[in-house]
Image (tube, rainbow, N blue to C red; front, side, top):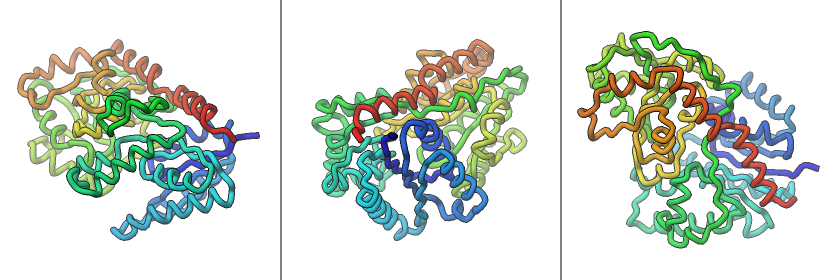
Length: 397
């Protein structure tokens, strides 16, 4: 008889991130475990009845019971999301007697921790980030105020009471064990590292001819944790040394295309040098063959020590080297140790000869190293095996 698992996600299953970083795992794990999947879905996605019905059918075929909750997008709605989500978790645990909970993120671990006070549940805290410090890094929490200090005490309890903990990066685990996240972190012994993995059967290595001008690619969001302004400045510097085309795949959430165009114009990137496209998650793997090298920056906040960009694994699996910054998860370790790109020090941008930086990366040998690194560290199958090991260790019924 299969063990039953309640999987909690604040990300929607109809979003690219949910499809990539939840469903990819759950589909494979559902061969061994019986899932109830609770997620928050954007209203616009739920209104796409054809896509909704298709996903519901696909999940049902895998024996996965999906319970979507409509995501409130107003200020009050965002506050109510948490309480509605928590109430639903309580209801499922009480009615269906589910005792094993996989919490994807801090905000889903809080209901599980609370439920644990009333029912004999075990939860896997799949952290994804240092969420309270992320809020502080962007200014929505003040590290000197009571609320932040209260949440940090709660954070310690979330870790202490978890049956198991997953962190995306070695640097994130070290931050906990070195007592940098909270005092007493060195006593936590059940932390496992599983980076954001990629389906290597979908994201495949394409043979490239590396014709001139080269194609520099930008994948995904250009706002939030990503510093697109630094990307534009770096592009302007690259243009001083070599000719290029800039290809951007972005879903245009929050009117990003307008922001991207304004930023590129600000740094005098001619419109004929770039192209912006909105493509689906299904299209992404085949379209990556058009890119020779990728460029992106992530704000190197304290909270980013626990990060692992989803796009990194997808790019490497596709044989694409990466230009990015340090102090974000294990990015620097992967890129420098395995020679699959270049860590760019933005403060020293004027010291780079970008022809000498980029040209040695545009060859089959580098592409092969990218793919080999992805197979070693970012394989979805290896990630699934690791989750299965954790499940077997901490989930008892």
